[in-house]
Image 1 (cartoon, one colour):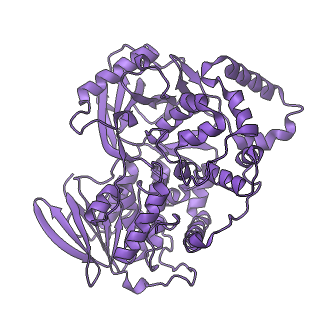
Image 2 (spheres, rainbow, N blue to C red):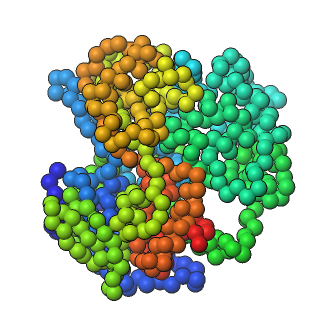
Image 3 (cartoon, rainbow, N blue to C red):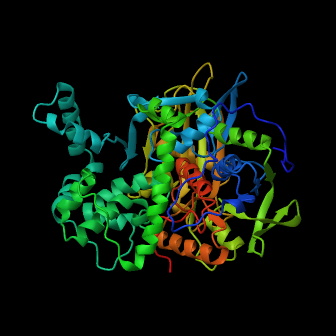
Length: 593
């Protein structure tokens, strides 16, 4: 892709709706507006977060000039779709990063607004919740795939009145579920764990401000369920070590329930009912004077974001959300890469936006008129000054460029190996989304240190237009297993293909040669929210306010969620608060002094 460094003056034909983003939002009187000072905006990073931030900034502040700096030669970050040739001129869609988006996720309305504004709704392809093949999931344990029963607490609450006289279908499903739970070693300890959680889970130690997900769940459910089941889920979601990742950051609802229970001296029964029936005991937590100011900021931030989502749901975004209410996941006809590509096309045509590829921001310095960026591009270094900067690159880059004395964040590297086989349904009889691999699986069953396997053909049926549908499978390797590997010791692409084929032969008895492969090494791509993450973010918020007076804002995967929905949401949230004095994008984190 050629570098785009000049301003382009073409109005896009893509937009089918224009939302009134330039109207002012009302905030608490404790924060002051300085909208007249939003004149020159720099967006650092051209991934999904940066592209989204530039998109909304260009529309909310049409008189401001916006410059987006991306250090690589392409925009889109980890979201990239590749059309790999297979035979007779046909291709299959392969993803180098995320492959689907979850429909009806809490933060999805901003993504829906983006899709609608860019005219991409017509290219959506979706998987219905009733599609048993795509929604079925497995866990490997200890040497075979186990189908994980779908469990939705909301359905339990909704149908609890019918339990005395269930329908025949419900009865059959219940019997099938009980048989699986009683016979599969994966679920050994489940009953004991639930009873433990209900009656006698260990209380949180006094003075403990955070702990690992593994430690938190072990206190309530026991180690067996955590090692055999929960670790697989965490591997699939975060590619992280369950005994390092923060429970406070990644399980905030459960953490809050336990906190309330201990404040009021309620026991395990309260915690269990709070988990199953979250509407019970939903009272505002008591604030201590030490955190009152922080919680006030958090409350204002939450109210502002709630208003943003509510406003979006009253427009085309809400209509799209309603149309997808019976959908589990979705993508686009030509892959998720359609989203960043459409954003790039729009921004290249916007009068007030400049895109700079191959431009790395090396330093961020406060001067008398704003923030000065030192930018390296093609071996040459230049400086530019901006009134506001939105940094969407990883946390470690920001603390280095801004010269902040803060501890670095651990990241995970993963290798995605996509294999396309000419024969269809090679994963039969295990049709479904794919399977995850827990940490407790014996080494001889997973010497490749795989995190999981995605059955792409089943996960997003109908995306590939090849005349004879084969089988497309992606093996995900590494993550926390590669934590102590050096940058030069990761497998080569050829090694990755060999490892993936060996694993599929062992687990699924697939020995056929693939007709096409795509290997992607995502270096340091997955931020690890380890123990103390919330406190680290609170310290970062305090430092940003102290050093840059709120002119430097952050958004992206390093802070408040690693998913595409999270990144898009954080980008718009930061843009909508850009004219609010002292806002950093981290107001939800308390403390930091």
